[in-house]
Figure 1: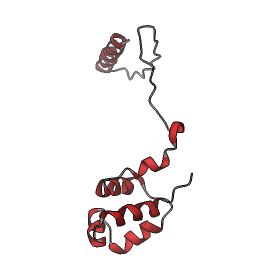
Figure 2 (figure 1 turned 90 degrees about the horizontal axis):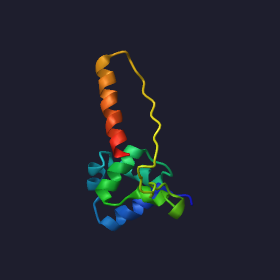
Figure 3 (figure 1 turned 90 degrees about the vertical axis):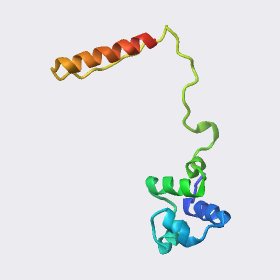
Figure 4 (figure 1 turned 30 degrees about the vertical axis):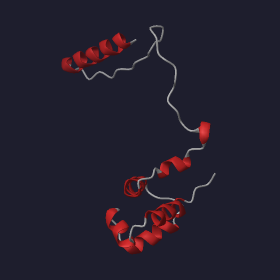
Amino acid sequence: MEVHIGREIERKYQASGMKLSEFAKRINTSSRNVYSIFARKEIKTDQLIKICEVLNFDFFSLYISGPTGVQEPRQVYSKKNKVMVTVELDGNPDSLELHIKRLTAINELL
């Protein structure tokens, strides 16, 4: 599924009833550039985040297609799980102590 993000933004903008100048101001751009955004197939992530906030809609959700989207593992971890940890040491005793504390905390969670 191909998303034309500019058209989707334009649809939500029109449904919002907001004036173009107000929308432009809220997303920190010019009114002229808003029309450019509506024409784009792609948009920078930071700009899309701002537009999501202003229009109160998660445009990122348009890119997720059902069960193929990324999901967190649902397995509940138990004491049987093992974790491999790589630690980069710098020769500083304070760093070593900090790593030991972190490893101890991880171990207690297992």
